[in-house]
Amino acid sequence: MLRAAALMNDPAMTDYTYITMLPYLNMAIDELVESLEESNSSPTNQLSAIITVPVGAYRLVPVEVSGEPQYPDDLVEVQEVSERDFGSNNGFVPLVRREFLQVFPPSTSLMFWVWEDTMIKFNPLGATSKREVQLKYIAKAIKQATNEASVIGAINARSYLAYKTASFCSMYIGENETRAAALGGDAEKALERLTGINNKGRQHIMTRHRPFRAGWKSRGGF
Image 1: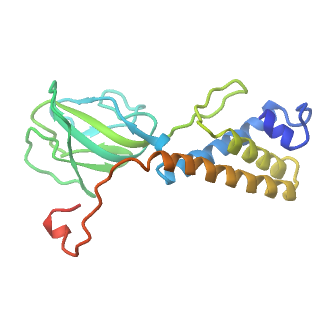
Image 2: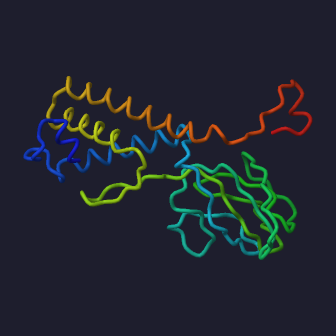
Image 3: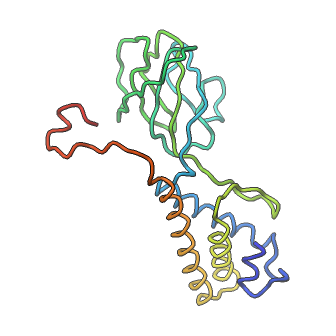
């Protein structure tokens, strides 16, 4: 916020104080978070702790719901749900994702998962054995600021947040569209650099590409 004030020719923060700029900083954080989530940037990729699903339980619920197994409170989008036997040292086995719930006779496995009503749901009859579940998911990687001393956990985002905060303040407080547009352009360039750095960091990761064959789905690809 000190940098944002300097960009608006108010380095002493006479007009643009911390309190005045804080809501606009959080708007800039929200836009950054959504951009990182949309591009699946590496800071948003998370592996959850192991979640225990009791016998007969059929869903993971948000953290504000008590009494049932819960998914992480920073979850934005689920990428993969895997399970294994409770207490096992074996690797996790991915569950198949379905679009709609279906009822199958209960087995030792949770069988599949569905994202519905902000819950991760399994076979409605649950499993006949206690299961361990682990999620790969897109997380909200940056926290909102509550004051000027907040630690928000944004790596390499200082330039973007300074420019974007200043752009919002110029537009909606100073009502200076020209300066707001210029600062917004600088913010976009900073965001391109930020996402470019993240993408380069993932270029060494080996991936298995889908076969380029018309009938690959009929042979079990998904």
